[in-house]
Structures are given as structure tokens and as C-alpha cells.
Length: 213
Image 1: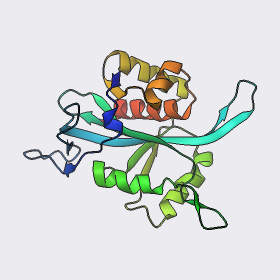
Image 2: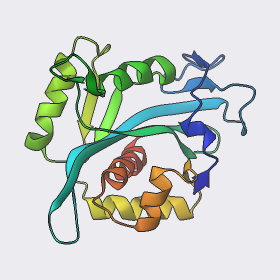
Image 3: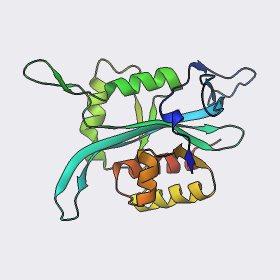
Image 4: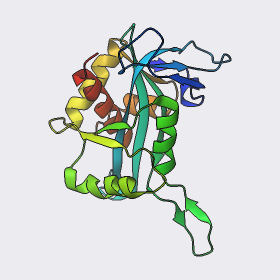
């Protein structure tokens, strides 16, 4: 299930829409740096998955911290394998600025604009309640720095347990790869379906399972 950590660190340097000789606009050609440890160049269906901020709970029932998680992945046309290229935590949409003008926390709005430029998608799957995720989604729609505006698709019938089971099954079959040693690999080993990492991975697995090739 694990892949070398470099896909999480080195974004593609070229994006061709659609690939030469192909008329299927669902697929994009990603070209990675020549120095990359593994040949990732290929034709991909790219898509994002996100867990909007939720509370991490301690064993005693108290809230540890609140955070969200995003990831960007692609399904390779030839093999059908799903590769997670990048991922990360987030808390707020806009930057948190102190009274002295210093940036206390970087907002997630930059991620959405950059992902579109590098991976050619503004579509994001998520598992979560419509009302509790609405403030974050509306903040992203309204933020002037986000171009184009993201399209969030709620997986209404999906549950965290169902999603985690799908992730494990696809991982055992070698159909989903995450960077080795990273947050996602650790979350999979911990086997807790309601963490932000697993909720984002679950949305990815279910979303691609329902999306046509």
C-alpha cells in the first residue's frame, strides 16, 4: 500500500489536458521531475478528497485539537492504481493574523488554487454532515484568492466505517498507494476510521469506486 515518500514532496512539472492522442477529457497527463525516485509520469483521473475540521478526541473523552485534512490523488489509466500525490492538515481557510500583523496560521485557500494549476482538478469528495461542513465550504467559495472555485461533492450514503473498509480492501489489492512513512500510512496502520486522515482517504476510495473509468 505504501509508496516512496517523494510523491508527497515533488509536484508534477507539466500538465497536459488532454494527453496527446486522447479525446477523453477525464484524463490528464502528469509529468514529474527526471530526478524523481519513481516513474510516476502517466495519464490520470485526478481528484481531491477532504475532511473538513473535526475534533480529535483523547481517550478520556476530552478534545485534543481540531483539524482537517486534504489530499490529491490520481487513478492511472493503464493500471487503475490510485496514487496519493500530496496531502496535508489544515485548520482555517483564510490566514490567521495576530494583532501585530504576523501570520499565526496559514490558511488552506492557497492549496485549492495551487492544486488546480498542478493537477488540473477543482473537484473534492468529502464525507461529513452538510450543516457542520457548510461554513468551511462557504469560506472557500467566498475567498477571493481561490480560483477556480472548488466543487465539493458530498458522499451522502458513505459512513466512516464503510470508507475505512474500502481503503483496507483496495490497499490489500494493491490498488491504492500512499507515501511511505507519512501521515496517511500511519493512519492506516492505526486503523481508526474517524481520524481526519482516514476520513479523507475514505472519501477518496469511495469516490473513485463510484466514478467511471
